[in-house]
Length: 323
Ligand code: UT7
Image 1 (cartoon, helix red, strand yellow):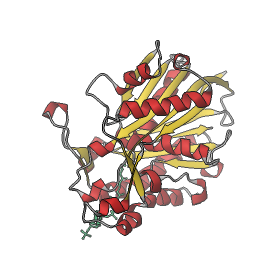
Image 2: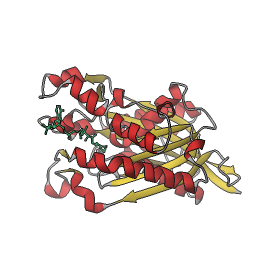
Image 3: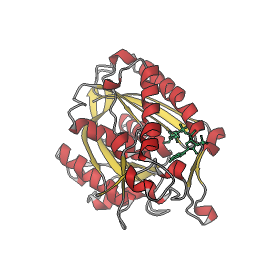
């Protein structure tokens, strides 16, 4: 018998405030045309005053619980991927734990920037397969609007806020790629590339800082590394790109998404795309895309999905799962 971590619930949350490109034209030397052409982004959401990463994560978690017909105490672990936690500590995950009335188990945050949700899925899979947890809430939630520099047009137009959540449950499988659940994982990082994307502040410098990115350099790394990691994960799962129903990529730039699909020899109608509506929500972008993909009727039970992401570190990776 093989144990698998199978998705049994999904949900997301977006703040009320929509920020269209036209609003940014009035505060920065930019145009709607440039933002759409270079990134594919048409709008993003910004959290309201007082709305935090943990409050958005809790809203997404409640929706995932509702979709699975479960309550907080049916969950025994929470893993929250974020680079924008409410406080230095405790973790945003423990705040979600109390918000959903989960009175046992354990919870913690993971920080791998835009690759955070893929890292979180990998950790959740390991906990489930090793028998340390039966049901895990895996969340990505970010308030990047708080760390983008309003005077830097090259980054301010790209990012947004939001949260998405999945519930993974330990179920029996046959150990083949026909099983439902997480089939393989492939993770990487290369700290030599840390200056390409970072925040110039933090606890030990007593500042919050702003996101700094050499966008063009990150772009150069993205397509190749994303396609390579997706192929690695598919090979580990004994599948090929022809078995894939949906690529669910990190939503940073439509040109990266298209370039990666092309390298994998997959048409764009096999790619879940939300970047136009959400912008880049870092660790929240994949669970948001999964939840939207389900509500649009794209992702169905039994489909083979590849989730892939790259971000600050650089850190990147992918997960293959059968929904
Ligand atoms: O989520 C983590 C991973 N992050 C990513 O994957 C992001 C990767 N990078 C990208 O998506 C793209 O590199 C960007 C969208 C950030 C930029 O697109 P690009 O085609 O690489 O443009 P560029 O940075 O080479 O800039 C081209 C021009 C520059 O002007 P000059 O030097 O050619 O005169 C910029 O100053 O566009 C200018 N520019 C802008 N113009 C209008 C930069 N930002 C803006 C702006 N509006 N907002």
